[in-house]
Every structure is written in structure tokens, then in C-alpha cells.
Length: 268
Image 1 (cartoon, one colour):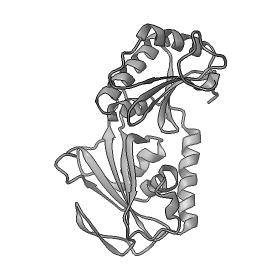
Image 2 (cartoon, helix red, strand yellow):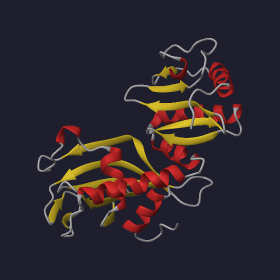
Image 3 (cartoon, helix red, strand yellow):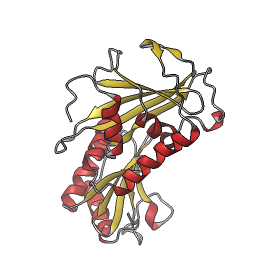
């Protein structure tokens, strides 16, 4: 897929349907005071709002902000009567021909026929607002495509790691490299908004999470590792938490990876 020219809503939809869309680790969900949602207490959710919106984007623009030269912004009508603005980047993996859509933020706008956006001024909206049934159908379309997807997800994991800031990206990169070295035929994927690593026909054995002040290297195993990692409450949730100034014991992490890969604790 070429992105040399203006990106279209149809191209974004095609990437989503090909299961080439992930949520960035620093993803933000906000809504303006003027948004007229009937379910405000739930906020704007990744699965409920973002995926159906990306299948129905009616306008995509290059990000106008000076500090987002490679970013994109899309606008979509939402069945509750509001409008969603989605900020996203396109990440091209080292071995993948098509990019990954990395959604960095979603925010709500008042659902008038014309809205005013702080970056793009007045945005004309279509008169037709999708019904709840149409919105749910979009979600079903995506879930069906996701169930039928058989890619290994390496590009999505690369995109996730690339989106991490500074020291978090360094830890994630080293974790990914150690896993590749210890389990050469590892299967990668982004599940539940975090990278997972697995053994084909067996299951997932490790994952990685990024939080505000630490990163978590998790080992998903049927039995406890030797020695047991310092955090976790069950064999499937053994973990090592690392802060910015911590050192990574690569030899110990490699040992845990080998043990976990021999006895994965989570099926596909």
C-alpha cells in the first residue's frame, strides 16, 4: 500500500479489516464537555468506539501540528449523535509491505453538521448518522476479520515497541531481542493492547506491558519458573517490573524465557 499521496478513509478501513491497527502504548481517550453521549461514564473505549469509527471515517487529514509531521487525523460520525476525532500514525514494519495504523488518541466532538476543530477549523459532516445497529455491524465486521486473520503479527509488535518513549522502548527492544534469540521461531502478536509471544501450535509464553513509571515483563507458564520472578500471583502471571534506572539481568530473563517457552500457559 502506497502512502505517498493523501491517505483516504477507504485505505484506513482496509488496513483495519486486514487486522493492521493497534492502540499505541500512550493512547489517550478524552471527551469534550459538549459531547452528547448517553453513556459518558464509560468514556471512549478502544473496541467500542475506535474500530467502528475507523471503518466509517468520512475525512482523513495530515496532522497540522508542527510536532506531528508524520501523523494523521480522522473524523467519524458516532451512532450516539457525537463525532469522534482519531489521531493515528502509520508504521511500516521492516519486512511487511503494508503499514500498521497506530491509534494514539480519540476524542469526542459535539455532533452538529459542522464542527469546529482546534487544528482544522470547520469540519463538514454528512447528514446521515449511523444507527446503533449499523455501528454494531461495523464492530462485527472487524471481529470476523480478526478471527480469520492468520498473520504472525510481527509488524504490529514492531509498531508497538517503536511507539514507546525512551527507556521503555529500550527495555522492550532488549526483551524482544532476547526472545528472538532464545526462541527463533517465535510467533508475535498484539493482544489486549500489549505484545504477546508464543510457540506455534502450543500457546503464548510471554508478554510486555508499559505503564507510566515502569514496564512489566510477563511470563505465561503452566508451572512456576525457577527461580520465581519477583512479582505475580500465579504461574500464568509471573513478572519482572522494571523502572527507568533498573538494570536488566539478561541471563536470568533468557532463562525464564526458555522455561516458559517449554511450557506455555495461554492458548491462542
